[in-house]
Length: 156
Image (cartoon, rainbow, N blue to C red; front, side, top):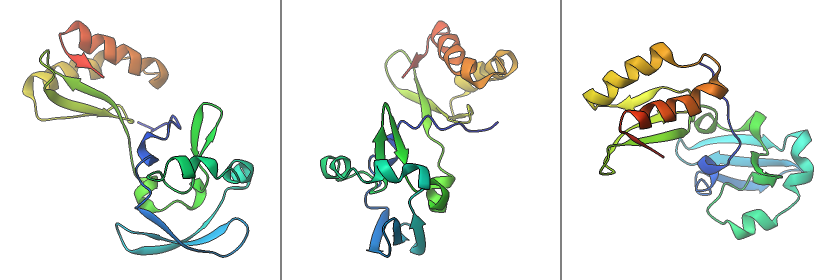
């Protein structure tokens, strides 16, 4: 199933230490390093995001955020999406946390709408989710949340 980013920025709000800008090499180009892998890369701000990149108030107010994250309306957008490192390209956010009635975390649902859980009860219910959920991902996510809640799970 395809992953569709919501551009909420949650994944990047605490990645300020994961991508380091070594130096600026042009108005919108940077030599960077992906700290987790030690991999150098060149980042160029996407042409359609150069205007929002020019607003430095967001990174100043959010020093833990990735230096390339910027607000645009209600969205938080990666301004180097094309050149972002592998750790960013392969990341899939958690769209739901599933807990029991006491609040004990039993599993998570990623942006690809797949379950990550070792709980046998939740995994059994998830098999029914897979069989019955709407095929349209936009409709499936709210449907899944209601389906799980109706079966006694807490969904955040």
